[in-house]
Image (cartoon, rainbow, N blue to C red; front, top):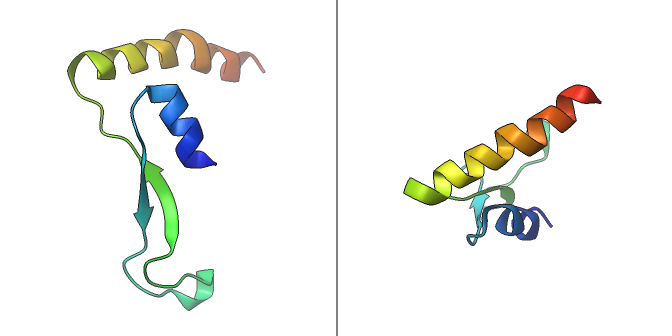
Length: 63
């Protein structure tokens, strides 16, 4: 779910990140998917930053 949403927001394919070691307190095992990331460079980075500042952040702050 996070991968598809991040891909839709950025316009670039997201990659799942996995855990490097076991942590029993968090019920986390090695190589479990724990996040998602996208590397944005140049124009795509600035377009995403502009959308974030002009659309998303004002909406979050006003709520």
